[in-house]
Every structure is written in structure tokens, then in C-alpha cells.
Image 1 (tube, rainbow, N blue to C red):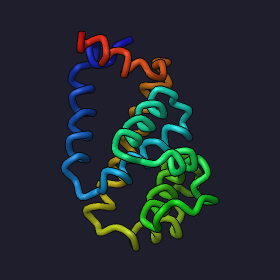
Image 2 (cartoon, rainbow, N blue to C red):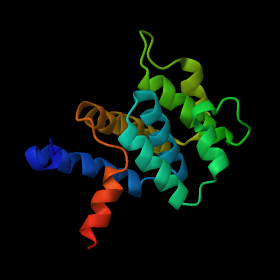
Image 3 (cartoon, rainbow, N blue to C red):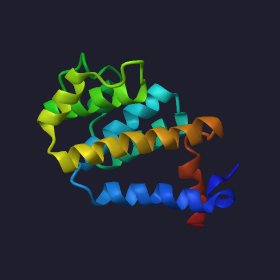
Image 4 (cartoon, rainbow, N blue to C red):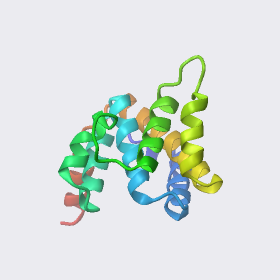
Length: 152
């Protein structure tokens, strides 16, 4: 099923969220780390593949890419990245208590309010994209295959 063709208005609005994020003060590297981590948690192979490749293309090291899944134990991440990843995990795996005060305070200490708002939008948006990817069983790597075919 191709949501972009069958629900073009909804898809257009999802892309609008991406445009908002691109213009926001949220650093691009943090935005992509958040997308990768949420996609890992949600089991969205399509998005894990996409965001791993996007990070790599933006100059991310293999060492950090491999460590995203175990970021708490790895020394490769800044305090801002750690705060964003912690918020991503709690907002993606919402429990009965929601996001803990501790995690929210860590994020608030690292980001000003407009950037923190953009971070929350980024987390919500990737979780929505993951729901499309998992529900529709989108195939990892297929976005690159389609792009390569379009260039012919």
C-alpha cells in the first residue's frame, strides 16, 4: 500500500512536519540520532536502514552508528545527545507515568524551549513514520532502490 498515493493529504502534512524540523533549531545530527533510535525501538527496519544511511552520508562514524542501540554504555555521545536519546526512549515507550521528570529535566537543561519543542515534534513524527513502516511492512533499502531506479 502506498500511503502517499492513497492518502495524499495526510502524507503532505507528514512532510510538512519534516519541513518544520528541517527549519528548526534542533541540530540535524541529533534529529537523525533520534529518528534512528526510535526506529530501532519500534522495529521499523525501513526507517533504521534509512536513518543509518542518512547519518553515514552526513559524516557520522561507524563507531557511533553501531553504538546508538547501547548509547548509555558508550562514551561516544554528548550530554545533549544523551538527553535527546533518553527522551526519545521514554516518549517512544510510553508507560503509565509517561516521560519521567528526571528525563524531562535533563532535556530541558540541554535545549532551549524552541529546540526542545522541535525535539518533541521530531520524536512524535518519527514514531508516526514508524507506524506506517511497520504496519505496511516497508522493506529496508527499498527507498534507495526506488531512488536509483528513478535516476535511470
